Image 1: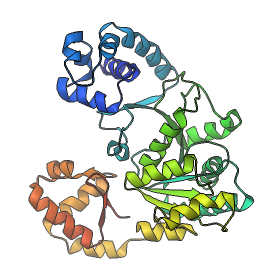
Image 2: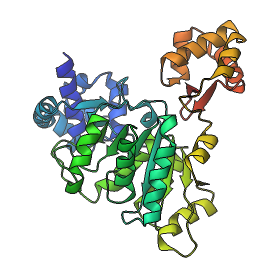
Image 3: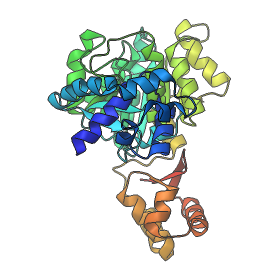
Image 4: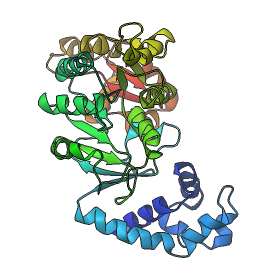
Length: 367
């Protein structure tokens, strides 16, 4: 039954013209994925945005044939899939514009972890830029974030390799399917990442690298992180696009400043000057502005505060201890507290410095 359900999800993902918005529209209307494939064409085209071509792909069995091939690849290579309607779908991506309908993941790092930092920049960094990335990742070691980037030349691959060196999980977001590795010379690093992190893509297994895919890939990097750091970039290009995405998603954006007039510094300096990024000189700057506490620091103050909480506040804190992040609706459901009371409790606990608010009405325990 699980495999059959996955087949229909892969089939919906394969339908050209059905992105996440239409997929969610279809799910909201018909309830589950299998039902969508049992409908008649006229039932589908009655919905706004569902064209005859989309309906024909679904009803003819064409999409299911593609999905059968894809499912064989998924099983053979032990690939995880995350569908937009599933509980294990990356929570940070649920709140972005046009979240991927389905993701393919090869790896072991949790994508819903407590902290995630994206590190991006030019493909031709200076020695100083490489040093900045290496020092930044080294400095983040005590905070144990997931390090995200795009596995490209330059700053991206430097961030991934620095994360592996310092024992931090790192995930590369790809602009192609998992049967390819681009650039090919990063294959050895990618294999290491699968053992301590992973590779993530929204593209089917045999999708080749295509220049059109990489700007779309950038929105996933931006959406998956809590903080995005830009290290050396020109005024225009993929890094600036990713920073714009991150700002639109209410992520914290940081940029490492550079020497005025240096082309590789123009983008970072512009982000800072235009208030689209905070100036970053070290990992301590990021941790301070993100209100992070090092994982090896004993939170004695938090333990003392916990004893002073009301029973309702303790319920909320205990729930957040057991989960990486929770939406307010789920908190209300699991705590059995009415929304009005829960909102008051959350405000009180946040004022006491025990929790913080994430985008999309989600809450997480400060650690």
